[in-house]
Figure (cartoon, rainbow, N blue to C red):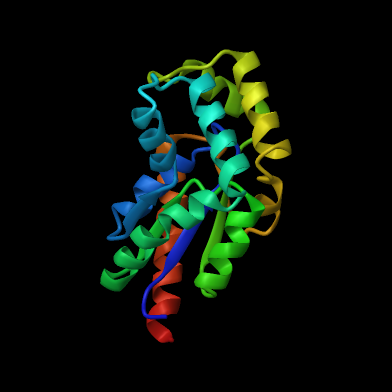
Length: 187
């Protein structure tokens, strides 16, 4: 494999989006699994709300299987990988992980972690699409129980602890990417 494929997972509010943006800024193509949800919302002419997103995520998986997001993203991933390094934003299910690991055996899985109290505060106070505490708890439970996300976090090759500032998170992520790229150059 001439390129790196990094998949990023984590619970809501952990900092996945910030981590993937940081990686993208280090010359990685970004493939966002959430685009599948957004596209389906547009097809169904539904507003982008927590409730509608959940319904779409769960219906797509019920209809097409738990690996549907990875399957639908494979063409984008392959196209991006032909050009260079790729970061996968928002790997959810265990089944997606297994499919991607089979397709890209060298894929590196990174989990972003933050304790519940911190994640809840971030999601409740975020400027775009803030959630209530009940919505955060419900989404978290759904991602763990319905979408099988726990296994992806448990199998992470690397864990980025997001306990402080955005600047600290970006520094940790940059150090990890630098180390991974340096190792890749030696191969």
